[in-house]
Amino acid sequence: MEMSVVIVNPASAGGSTGSAWPQIASDLRSQFGSFRVLFTKHRGDAAALACEAARKGAKLIVACGGDGTVSEVANGILSSGKDVELGILPSGTGGDFRRTLEIPSRSRDAARVLRNGRTVRIDVGRVSFIDNNGAEAMRYFVGVASCGMSTKVIERVKAEGISFASSLLQTAMRNEAIRLAIQLDDTNDRQLTVLNLCIANARYFGGGMKIAPDAKLTDGKFDVVGVGDLSALKIFTSAPRVYLGSHLSMPEVSHALARKVTVRPADRDKEVALEIDGELPGRLPATFQIIPEALRVRVGGRLHG
Image: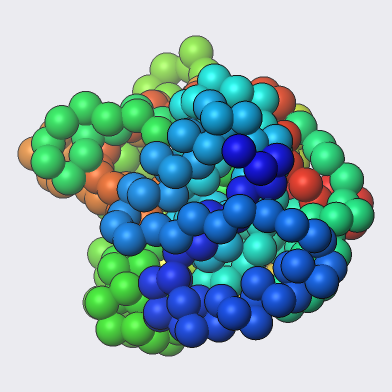
């Protein structure tokens, strides 16, 4: 197999990646060089294709799509047991992970990063949870996992095709706080009432919100950010602070570092959905573990997070 493989999700960015692919491919060939392309057809294909490509000897596997595609390709590489490098050719709705890696959104510029960028080893998260069929499941994540209001925001984005910002404003009008039992590393369980809880490996989620402004992809720890029970008005007025990353100083926001995080509903009969890298694969209870330096990634500028 060729040394470089590009896995394309034509359904990403509301289906526009498929129609834009000829131009993206042209930019990639002119700026990067030769590659083999594989197209996904169903959810989960990117992970399976990446795992197979890694086992067949690919040295660089590039995810062309949004955060969900990037996450799937990373999962495929990690499950292959091979030390293969991940590249990103952004073409999706959120673009949160590429922001942390300083990869440009334009395909021509991103292709240049694939050719000239640096390789860094980053931490990944591993999460055990209950999937949508009620079975125990495990997957890796590179960006942010969360529960609470974010799951409803993403649900609306996927169902209605609206922006994250529009969905946030609509969801805030009728959202309720949830009570969670959370354990950080080996500390005792404590109960939190939150609108949202994020277990962050990277800095951004939700289409550009800088939810964990201090997160570093190379520090061996999660940034655990809890947003307390804010009114709809307070959510509206605080939203700019979340996008800028200046919300950690708010009294309603908690922040901690941990290598392992366990989260479950405080009310055992309550179902609480889980979001992982922009996807909705299941629900709590969940256990998050950081895996230091687990993945090689090609990055643009100086790696902040």
